[in-house]
Image (cartoon, rainbow, N blue to C red; front, side):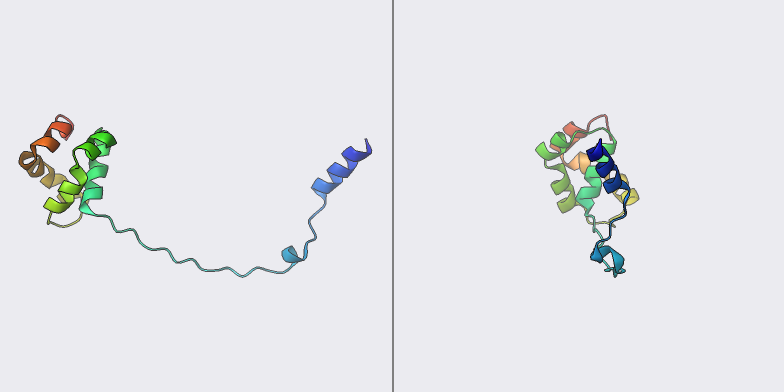
Length: 100
């Protein structure tokens, strides 16, 4: 029973380490903003529409779209250009058929 009391006291007694008594300085962390490419946005749109990642990878659709697309890198603009992209790339069109 004595060991149980020691264990209980160990849990409820505050830690008195010297490291915890002094206030810590907050170190600022710099975060780089993620720049998305047109190909990555295209891939995200395809996955949201139900296209499997392996279909996107096997047809190299994201890389082809990134090379082909020259417009503004915005989701709405990319969505509008997908139909034209599919008409120019038959292999990608086959993988995306019925989903986009």
